[in-house]
Length: 596
Image (cartoon, rainbow, N blue to C red):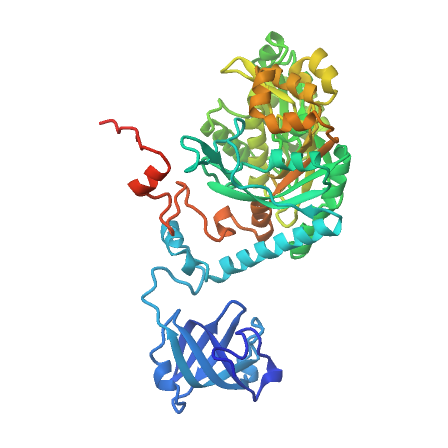
């Protein structure tokens, strides 16, 4: 028999009754039932119940074992009685009667519980992550992550993509987030950078004559952490294709990611045909470029109903500024004064003056609008609003007014708030869509200049003609995002593969030809020697896994994450290094002095 085990702790079934077996694993818990000891032993695969009777030669040692000790158990497989069968365990029909126990490794008193799913301070969980990972839910999440990545690889290979690896040590990128810099010992005073993404490399792979590239790519960005992005590093399913238009990329990747969601959704419905929503429509309907389509609320412009009305606050704004619009946020079932007042109070807590509203209720045989706005604009306009918004008895609508560019984020937050408060959001499905036609440029008010709105390497719609003859702020990009349940889970674009068009786009934001040649020399040179039209995207693996397993933050699906302060409590990183190491790298530290 093997030194440590003949079976895993998930392998034994009723067909094994009568067999002599050997198991090894961690003591999950110990229970004393009237002098008979029950020990649940756990390994990577599952859990088996061990029984130690007082007349067993193993009983004396069994009395000493404690939680998370590692033990070996030899014993006989027996069937459980009908009243003790555990249908929730694969091994629930059997138990092993111990004949011999060996302690392979004892455990000190635990700094955090492993048995159960107790909420425990994050700093302790991360410092002792190797214990935290033994918890059932976290262990399952990590295994799900591995299976999801394997499914992505399988599906990409099945449709003709080839996985290529790109460098980890590369050049610093002047665009996007901050780089992690790596000093060079061999080249004093010079630095490598960890890649923010394989963007330029994957385009260069297309320049090199390969086709249909993909990679499970690590990406490194020195950014502040947030709930849906870990500090330091993240992983993405990175792809690029040659000789494609936007529709080719979308129609290729939609079934891949739909299939991954269906495979791991545990029966939850998944959108079959992803809607393609323009950026402008997404902002007007949902107040966000990553809308949660499980929320059925769609905003509408209702400016005409308030123009020249008795509600002078809105009417005067409309009359005095052509940019002013009034948007309605219809709220089915929200037609109570108490709910409307709560929404108004929430708006004030968000720094807004308030949130105008109308709610509709039956008065005898008549359906009437109630609230200050209804009184001011009169019954005819109130009824016209109700008809346009498709509302009825017991429903409400909330209103925001001003320049949409300034209030759109707040309106989107109000839509989300109303949907959640009224329980309108269908949480038991995965609602996916594409957002397309993003702006190519945006106006930076503080700097009084235009800049790229998204990826500077995307092709502008209309190409060189648009760059030369069109208002830059009206140019759209061949840029697209995939969104699921309010999270951006993928982003991509058709690339600008023409060198003169590339230069013209960068000149529009203030970069000269010389700057482009210097900062993006590899791509610029490659474009001079026959560049195929190409495009691609990258899907965020961490966010996809988080959605599929129902985790609340990315630390619950990452094996060894940093904390919110970008500190690795397990490995104590970042850490000090020796003077000898610094001398090898030709570096002298000059930390900023703390102000007294």
